Amino acid sequence: MSVKVYGINHIALEVSDITKAVNFYSDVFNLKKLDEGEGDALFEWDGSRLWAGHGVRTQQCTHHWLKNIWKVEVISLRLVDPRFYHLDTCFCPLFGGYVMYFPKAFDAESLAAIETRYPEDKRICVGESDALRFACNAVNVGKTIVLNAVSNELSRQLETLGFCVVQVPLTEFLKAGGAAKCLVLRLSEMDVTHAAGVISAPLEESASEWRRSA
Image 1 (tube, rainbow, N blue to C red):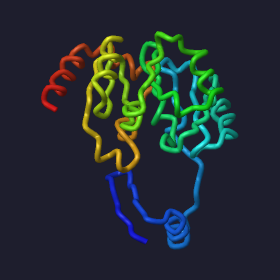
Image 2: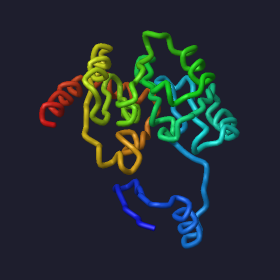
Image 3: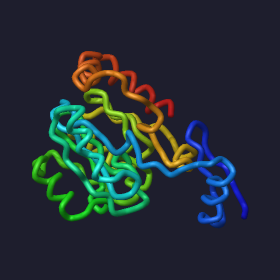
């Protein structure tokens, strides 16, 4: 069995036989597969509801715990494409009530739940090429969005809606299975997070400088 290692922080192992690899690490390190994690639970931009993913790494039966803990509406979304293993790889609630998502990552019932809660003019559907670059694995602070390099079409669409788009090349980190959001940990409440982005007027000017220097 050949093994290649990619990534920093996240570690990705490329193996020739996944079954042998799982058995090997289970035996040697006494590892157990757990259902998780933070990437399958995303708050609405104003904290009014919690979107919870399941179907690849997280079980739907865990969602009632989230409702009991946070005391908010929890909406379950089923992921059907294993390439998008966490909700935050294909779904991103944005400031102002927008959402950026890859429709083919969800089943019909989940798409209906999304479309029921977001009017058409608030829905930003990402194409497959941008989805595979983990465009939805973005960091959103107010009107600023930090994400991996994306298509000109998606960038223009976001900018037309008033967002300041900051593209950061993250191709190496994609090998480890993540992009911009996987590199950060939000510590503030949603209103504090977005208020900082809206109040900080120089942020958009700084983002323009970053784009020119990239």
